Image 1 (cartoon, rainbow, N blue to C red):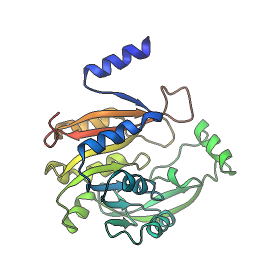
Image 2 (cartoon, rainbow, N blue to C red):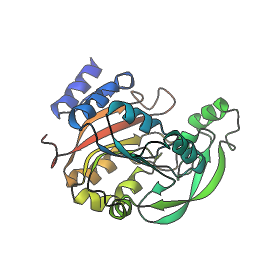
Image 3 (cartoon, rainbow, N blue to C red):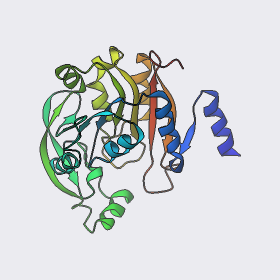
Length: 251
């Protein structure tokens, strides 16, 4: 009954709660609103999983991917060498152009510019899964290059981004701040980003932070996917949230 009431409240605001197993609904939302050859920015590409997924969903997408971890970049690059419409960059995106220390973890998708909080349930479990100690879960720290999305768009003469996907393990706010000029010019149609509510890293980008940043630029949340129902169950509590630009989509 409580779950039904919560869902009704979200529905009043035109929102929907989508469970992990029903993520296809978010994909259907993208299919309905994007053309067959969209321009996609994949920020936090890891080993190219997102590129593979969107290459199947869309007929001929142009994808610009960004991954600061050299090993993950090389794996991604080797997968798509023959794809002329896929551009793989060994680069992180952030608030400004700089060189910054990057924490590379035993599970590469957990790597982040943020420090991992010690002695958490999450770290204990992940360390066990990868046969290492909690102190050894960060296997290496490397200095990597960061640029802004605004600079990349300008230098490569990109006129629009149909979908901006951000999965940067707590660094999402920096990516968005470095995209502000592109956002102001209405060059981004849809933003799909991760929000973490747990204490995995030494800071997190909250839902209220995201709303305060995007709402003034006419973005509206249209879908949310929760990994867990609450902070007390499961290993980690995060969500993927999708925003549409109201100047492009009449919602």
